Amino acid sequence: MNLKEIEYIVKIAEERNVTRAAKKLFLTPSALNQQLLHLEREIGTPLFFRSRTGWSPTEAGEVYLSAAREMLRLKRETYHRLQDITDAKKGSLSIGFPPERGAHMFTSIYPVFHKEYPGIVINVSEVSVRRQQQMIIQGSLDIGFMTLQDNQRTDDEYLPISTEELVLAVPSVHPLCSQAKPGGKGPYPELDLEGLKYEPFALMYRESTIRQWVDTIFRQAGFVPNVLFETARARTILHMVGARMCCGLVPESDTLALREDVSYFCLPDHPSWKIVASYRKNSYLSSPAMYLVQLASQYWQDPSRVSP
Image 1 (cartoon, one colour):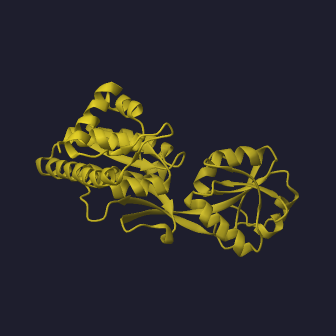
Image 2: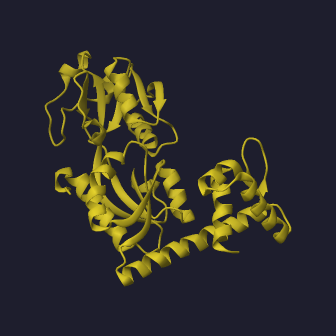
Image 3: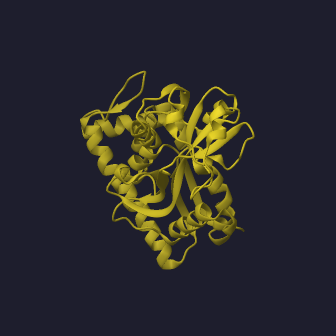
């Protein structure tokens, strides 16, 4: 097994397609396919089941990929350690954050990071929290920025960054808006969810970590919501609320761009979850990685503290 060959096979597994993998590797599909066929002849068994709907690893392929991902992780971690020892401010760093949640954070802190580490190339993956957790376990992601509850953690390492409240979004013309109680410890007035039991809701998709939390909140309120729409983006929920189509529950930070057609309310028990930075258990977090986490922490606690 050589590292270039390993990278080829891992990329085929990630893309589930030779043509897409070849494009990512800057190879022709025929050249990549020949590399795979040569390896399979050498091993004596296929590594993938070929299908028009997507390639999947055989039992032998799973064994190969498990070792291959670990070897690539060890290579990356070794380089990180060597870079810190030699104080070489160059290399690469792979980070992840959920779609929509981390883009503004990253564009805010990257100029500061780049000023300190101009030779570090950052590879960004905008994927779900659960996908980030899988990538961390596989060794293909150095740091994942995510929001979750304690019972949604894996056995990996989690560095606390901040907490975030879940808030209720209601069309500003809704009659219940006038019944909200003055704000207490939260940023908005309080409104009981039970008063909206007959209203339609737009919610985050079922596989998301936030949906598990939202479903628990509705159970505690004593009713099953009438779900009009499911989406992967909180801003889509706010657009639908603003159009007077429904109500919604969104993380507080997603309401920073306030809208006149949407009113926000805290729930009486102020449910909140944690923003964290996660990395593989017992792995090495390089100096650039720790600096990036520090900048992200400063941003989520007080965006004005981060400036080039």
